[in-house]
Length: 262
Image (cartoon, rainbow, N blue to C red; front, top):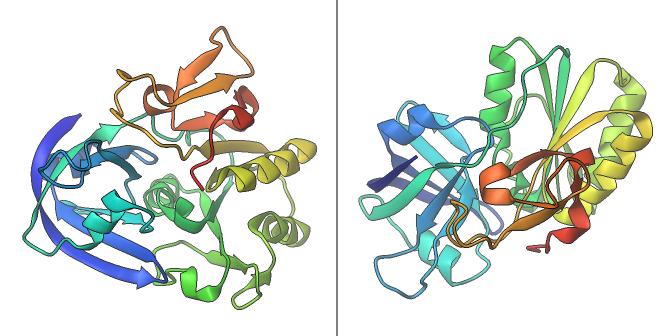
């Protein structure tokens, strides 16, 4: 983990209310593993006081990128940043995806800005020789950043304006009808309602599912105890998303214990 004041390289809008911000950091780029996140201070003042947590979206050399929606004061400040501006970044944080193992195909399922960890994860899986499929969903085509960042993408939109008409669970079902469910694992990130529906779908079919949880964090390093999730297995009643997650086997957690951020 490093704390650095980095320099912004690029800040742009890539879809309806979907923005990316890129900065340069050799240490953070080299240390980051798929599914880890950064805790970023919006500005140098005390308003807002707390950092914001964002999954690492892409890494290219020393370039690190996050992706986000504008939902409040902090993200609005990020959207106002320009190349050359400084940014206070803490990271990488959290436990990476558990993506090693003997399986042939990885299906990466995301909704909205749950797309965030998927390009880094997809690249790591492809490097291991896994077949990678991305299924990404949003309400409409205009909310999807369709610019080649995903490996073998299949899209789902609520209004049918791009790809499968419906949600990502339906799109996954369509994929499995065509390709089968043998020798695959599913990795997912998105709103809690999506993860809950996907978990029920995968559990009913005996498909391994790892989820990356979205939740509000304050410190990001386990001090404030502000991001607990209840465990359904193991010796611990609760774990912290920032230090034990954000990536969990869906069967190990009680997802309803985690407040939704949407």
